Image (cartoon, rainbow, N blue to C red; front, side):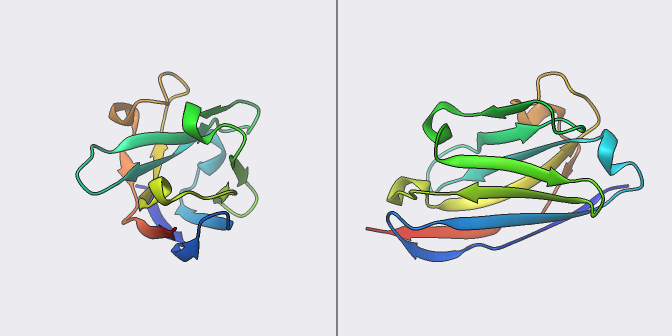
Length: 124
């Protein structure tokens, strides 16, 4: 069983930065692929970023490339999402997720564990 708890969301202005954190309770955290997804009002949940267990491979959705950085600390069972140059369209609930595979980790269907989400609101 894997429990995920996100934190770090909040209300910021356009151009600001935020760092989201996800604390995982998992005996084999370093073997899990971790992803960030977001759900904006009126939209479907979408992929943001993902990182495999070793941290050696990372994926980003195109709108986030160059602005967001996913990282992980396997010693402390943490995964992070550094978000820079935030835009109003980044406003959403951000979810951390864990998968026991390294394949198709841009797809939410491979993730078996999800956090409760943290709200990010970017004002213009």
